[in-house]
Length: 188
Image 1: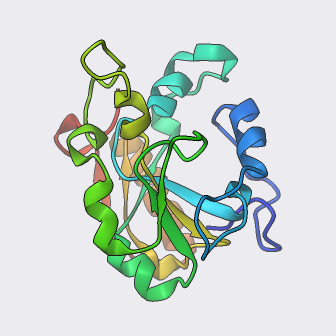
Image 2: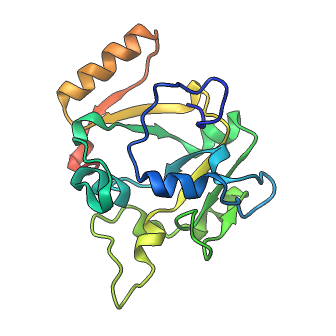
């Protein structure tokens, strides 16, 4: 997987998220150096499932093009695999495009991620926790690209989607696990 400016990025790639947010993120500075640069130079991952953006894509909220969840897959990576194969990475304790978010480049700081919020199914801010949604969207950011050996597996919405993914993996001569929505916890 490549960032959108990489020479090997797929020209047919379709952004499915909030195009305004994607544009604003492109030149937004990464808050730690190394690795430095801007968010547009990175391939971003959420730490958890059921992201607010997935819900926006499912519902078409805020003018985002509505898409069926059957067309969306999770690409699952392990932090240790990325660190072993990629030199430039960092992570946040909240949504990366927020000024109050802190960036880290030391795995010893993973305890700064609010793990109790990362996997919440219901994550809206409340009077008791006005920062829940930002923390839910903690990110792991990898500069430039993710090598295929860092992909631990793929999660799909249903069996039909899993079969479509398996055909693509076979065509590319890649072997990796494809799971269908484990425990019903990955899709809305």
